[in-house]
Length: 340
Image (cartoon, rainbow, N blue to C red; front, side, top):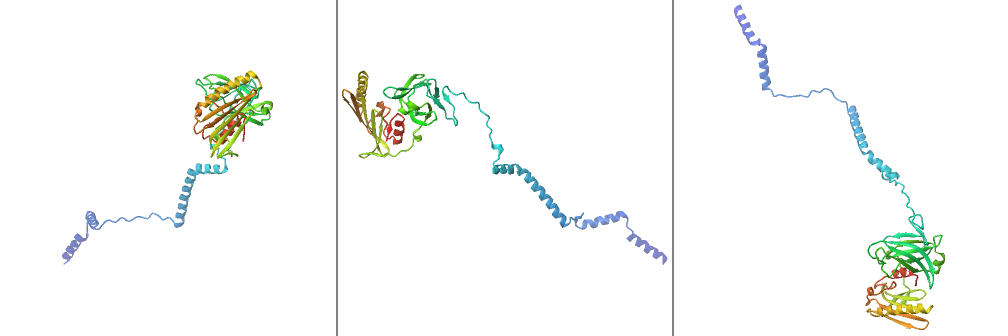
């Protein structure tokens, strides 16, 4: 019996005593049969209060970065509101003052005043003007030399004006620089423009300007003749009536009277006007006649602008069809006429 007990114990040892290698194999066998599962190991938890503090810190840094990026734009906006945007301010360097032309009186705001004097010389675009003086003969005149700075001939088509003023710069009258004669390239000529007695006695300064019809003030015609509105322009020897249909020039009546002051001068002038009248009568739409007496002669010229070609006529006082009343009035008054 004892022997059997020992055998049983031996059998039991064979069953229960497992080597470590066998034990590992058993474990591996069991692990291969059970699916693998990974479980996150919690190292620690941030309390809710600390989470809020962290988010606030991140938000603060985001705002700080945004403010830094937007600072230049904010600065410009504030400067604009305060009117102190120094980046847009332009500081002009002081310019050296140009020497005045001979006879020129410097004035603020780029207005140049020139003395009416033989030593005065200045330029206006392609023209040079010099040697100014006043003269009284059969009328009052402003005399000066005009030079053409171009190589090509110059026609007095531009509306340049001399404004005559007193010493205290009060305007007396405006004189149009006009001539029927073409000025050759690099040529010179003297202009003799009629002025008023007031200008002759009191004008000492002048300015020069260029104007267009847009610069002329609008007018309302008061005169009437049949279906036309009229503008009558007069000087000492001439009366010209302009006839307008709805502010469009259509007819001209010109009556010129010359009084005999010197026989030789009278005959020369009569011959000149007779030749001119004959030339005008050769143009369609124009009739011109002369009445001669022993002491004077009168030239009566009638122009129908719906028929007449003014390119064949030489006159500073005849305007083409459709010219506005304000143009006629402004320019005729600048040639020493009174218009109403």
